[in-house]
Length: 454
Image (cartoon, rainbow, N blue to C red; front, side, top):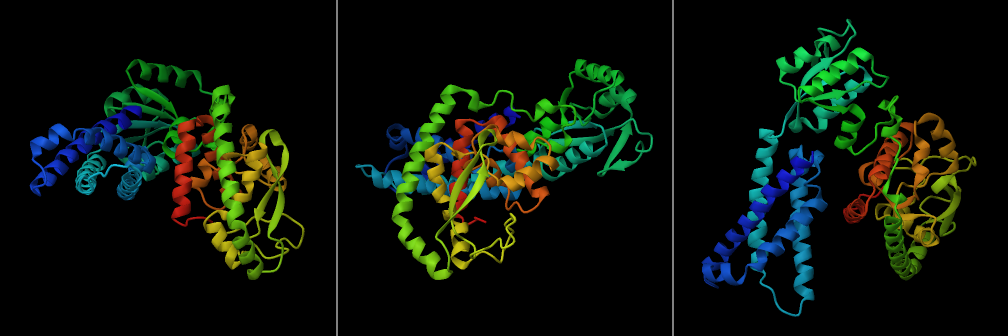
């Protein structure tokens, strides 16, 4: 999949620079400067706009293959890219002592948007990197990966069908795809269907016959990818229900937090964000406190125990967003969408995530990080550990204010939602890096500015 992202980036690079030339042509046509003069004295725009555009495309998700596969998501990401470029340029324009030309960014932005939109639309429709694939196993795991590919990754895969040893399935269709044969037919089907990739959707130990059939397939140059690995690449989640015997797929054996350098840099970032966040919070607190008190009686803050790294219990403080005594029975209750217990001011605070700001104190104390899985209440943890495989792995790292799961999922008010969040959290723990942390922070800020809080 890296080659697909690289290919997208290379074409974008060419188009962004072509847009610079178009911008120069428009600029010169207005009579301000000659085109030849622009091409010799203004060459820095090629490098500056390339870095700016490709960086903003990355932050907007235009190199996320899940976004690339869908026209609507691509269109939304392109609009976001243009807005980011414009904001970044205005920030540079007003901060530099020398005056920069204004028109070129608009000319270039329009040209780049049109060129890249046409290219990305053609990429989706032409399916340039579409791989012919065969799914081995038509059980639950096979059905799930077929549904996922068809819903989210169709431009990247052409599914030939299934291979399954169950005679009751052979000759029938599963998820709209034919069951073409059994493991003994694998070599023949590879040649007949021109298969380039086998998706192994078997959650139990492989039989000797299937293992040898897969070796034969590999010798023919066919790539073999386990279902959990492919599912993880497509969705950004670890499929805890379909790992089966392959426990190592979920276990972060060498996650980034085990490295001293990463931990030191992340802690420095945590401290910087926490100090700035608490300073801003102190300035806003009088106004927020007054609004909370006028809206409903009760305390300004409330405290709750949460489970942190290594299963340790710590206390978080949040701004009160619900009516007083919201849990009258004394039992922990999940917050729900459109929860009637949320006050009017509380709804506003939740939309902007301002109710979470006091947790910067927990970050300063080292109990939380800026980025990580959301900490859960001990009562829910005790329940969810029994119902969701690998749930305890969430506690391998510090919990965070922002997180991979928060940028992808909404409320958690039942076990299924909690399972979805765990799958995102495990993906983050396995793949965490400074780059991923920055991306999550950017998406969180965008989430807040778009008023998409819960």
